[in-house]
Amino acid sequence: MSPDPASDLAAELAALRRRVEVLESHDAIRRLRNSFHDFVNTDRWAEIGGLFTEDAELDYDYLGRASGRAAVGEFFAAIPRLLPADAGAPFVRQFVHGHSVEVDGAAGNTATGTSHLFATPIYHGTSFLFSGRFADTYARVDGEWLFASVTLEIWYSVPLAEGWATGERHRMSL
Image (tube, rainbow, N blue to C red; front, side, top):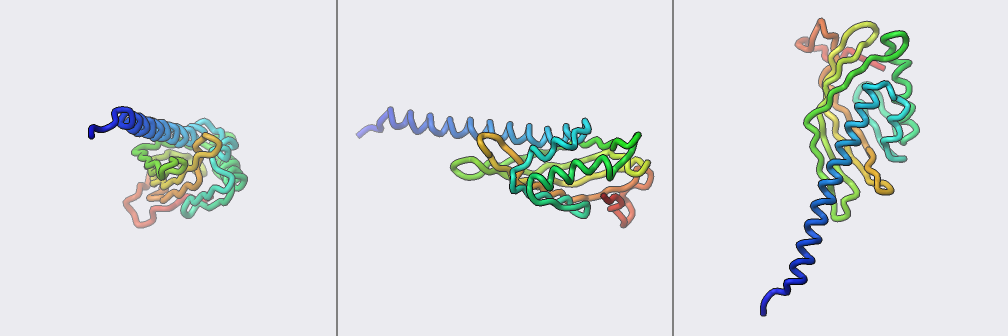
């Protein structure tokens, strides 16, 4: 008995549809991560909370933690007050790279990802270098990808003039 061409075609179409959905999810999640850094770089701190799920978890290593969208929003909205640089406004420029994403499960409504961060903030009048790695989980809520958790492992946060060659690699606090 020969294979049924209609069922083969339906199976191939379903597989292609799933591949397209995964690719579209990858793109949406990368845009989400890029939006986060664009909000930081353009001093839109109060908008960052909207990128997170209601029950999100944030772990910024020794800089602090927050649970829930409202608390995450408050964490970032406080940055201008905690990191004044120029006339009371913070100066933080972040550059993210090496973002990889893995969409999970058959439904494709959750995902994980990692990315690397290099940032050049001004901290109490001093130029700093800041580097670390993000480990994220994402959830699709009502068709929109959001951060479910963000964990930042900070590799160093040091004054530019001093560098990170010394044993003391964490010199910033909020």
